[in-house]
Image 1 (cartoon, rainbow, N blue to C red):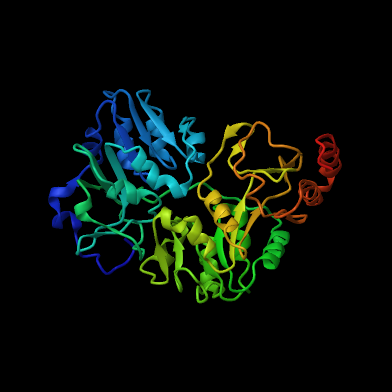
Image 2: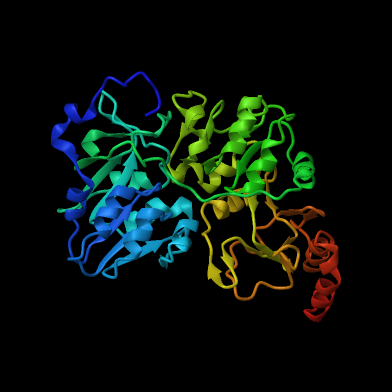
Length: 432
């Protein structure tokens, strides 16, 4: 916990009967178990579990695997399952069984597929027994609060470096054990995000598409959050998002995001995950509130926000208006996260708009990100979900457009060197 107010309080002395180690918690896992873990992953617990060589037929669900998840994947007797694949997993050469689950549904997934052992990263317990969620709740609330069967165990891995964030929280009585880990190496790790060098066209487009007083959401990615961070001249923006990232924090710091006009959770920035660069800002900040994923990403709740503007990235979009945000060359790269939930929430409101930001090309200009048709990759968002697409060459408004209009508008914002090829493909496909 970053705040100074409870620095003299030692939770291990207050509840010594709950204090345990990563190794002891990992020893509770038995052959045939399903293990559920949190986001961020409880790395020390997963490392201890990966070291066990006496298990068989064990599956571990890790929402976004990092070093601990990669270690588990290297154990041939344990199957790693995940809805979102990561850079660290790829760099380690580790493999996971992909489970396509929307972030809003992570909690219900754990209820439908109850693990016997659950381990959730949490913040430092407070003197009154409150256990802050740390840097994320996401679907962790279901792992902790679900109805337990005889023999089910829930461990909390206490991370001493995460902030105290106002909002939902747990209690020491919710846990069968609290894992003590040293401070060193406890900072959550997320994938690197690299924005394009030329941001101006994207910023100009967002300036046009996002009015004063709108409520904004940002996907996690260098382009979306950095472009949004440049809208510091806006007035009275609200924030209702999946991930509290640096770009949204900068809007609050500049005074552009006040939450003053918000229609849902008025005066509060709402999120379910916080990135490390926001920790100091969020610590004991009464203007920010963390809530479970089934609240932050509830489609109806999203739709009820004032002039909702959901800004997410894409890897490719085809001439039908379908978006792929998670695969490259037929290989799973990431996952859907909460993007689809925000797209669907926007479809339920006449004043809302979903915006996909995407450089027009990849591979240093050799490949167009606007393609004739998504083939080897999975479709993340259908042509019924995608409202607006932005590249450095302009804005394509796809909502309520015909199939021909969608294709023509997308070709118009493709890189000029790829437009003729796309026109030929559209004609062969019978679109134009």
